[in-house]
Length: 333
Image (cartoon, rainbow, N blue to C red):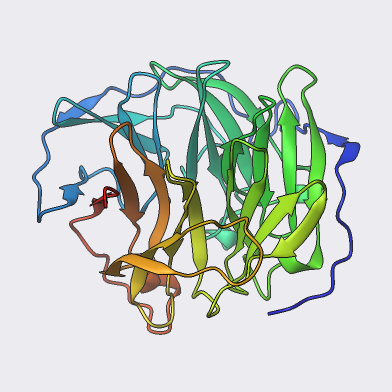
């Protein structure tokens, strides 16, 4: 869907970071995580890993410095860490952190970044947040509010060491500078804004510094290069593209959430920065609301199947599903 661009610029210091006011109800405090619980999962089918009971409606997913898989929940401040065939559930014991919608490892500071947007609980008074956790015990190190009450959705490390954050309500990608404790606007554009609730969602960066962006509601994939934003030509509009990642061969990996049809897919788009229409390879389909993904230390991609369509789809239900999982797909030809 073509929409006229309004602003495309890397603006100098658009706003400084906004922590919650001291003493407010949402003011986080640095505190130790809750007691860990170890759970040995079962493989429910080839290419899937069952998640532990604490991880319902999974979303955020990443590998830490030790190569351990981390998975977070949409509706709880809990992260599960997978090591030696066992999940360890770790709670984030800090007010203001109520979900784990994205996870990104920050190698320069050995931190884990996460977001907790108030998406499902809009009437609760919760506010969108962005936070950094210590890599080992997942203790809170820094908590931030996006400028203009922005909706912090997905995160990715840029090549300059700054953290990129998608703002799903204001239609922009921000860059957070740790040393200066400040945000800058990398790009703001009408094509990144929502049609109703969620616009720009997934983000990833290639070694050349090109930024790939997905608009969840319009179905567009976009490329930011040298300050200019353009749509990536595709043979069809995607149905709720969300998490993005890059394969080692440079192909763009996309999860297609498919809220209306229910046929979630893992897609591969070769040569995503090349001009002209790019092909779409379907690596996996029949997934229920895939939302995020990460490429593992080996030749595989790990996808969180959130099943959130049961809450936000055309036929919502009060019956919560069970048996959440991470779907694993081999990327070797």
